[in-house]
Length: 201
Image 1: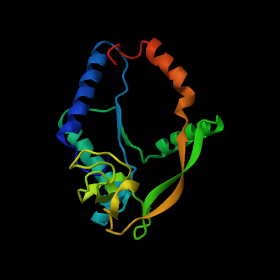
Image 2 (image 1 turned 30 degrees about the horizontal axis):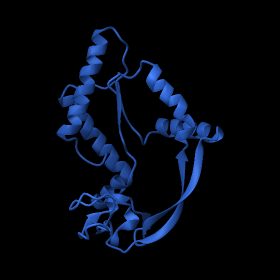
Image 3 (image 1 turned 45 degrees about the horizontal axis):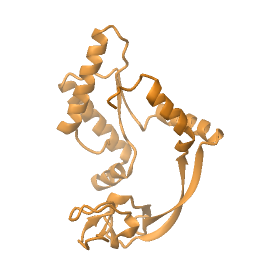
Image 4 (image 1 turned 60 degrees about the vertical axis):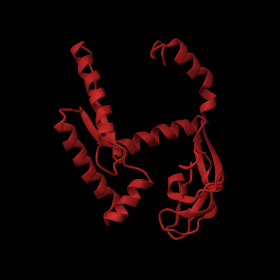
């Protein structure tokens, strides 16, 4: 996410990828080493609000910081971009349009918790309440740190928005899903027979 600084865990992943890319190039292979900041999502929107800037301003600042950090570790991407780019938007629209035209996108109504003060739906980490299993207070909407239980945000007892503190209401919204089961046979055959994936995987 483009909502904060790179930490050592992130840097480790990029160093590992950089080593692999350099090795492949030493073997004479053509490699395109690309990366991008994931610039979409509620965490970015909320952090930008806290900072008093637009999400776009925050994304630009974080991208500059990330690229400076990577350069400091001699990690050089052929292209470092953002999911907020026009190219990504156009490509995502193209892929979605083709999938929808092929009948591979299915709509479904989902009931979620909604913050009436902020006028936003609350994903699991943006709602807190009492664990429905062990009754520990101040637990997130997806799991309990006290007993380890997992659950849906709608199962929380006395839920509160972690954004505004408001009591959320239940609200329906339409969501669209990729119909992965239609590709199950093809994917299973590809995984087993393509040779593209190591046996250990």
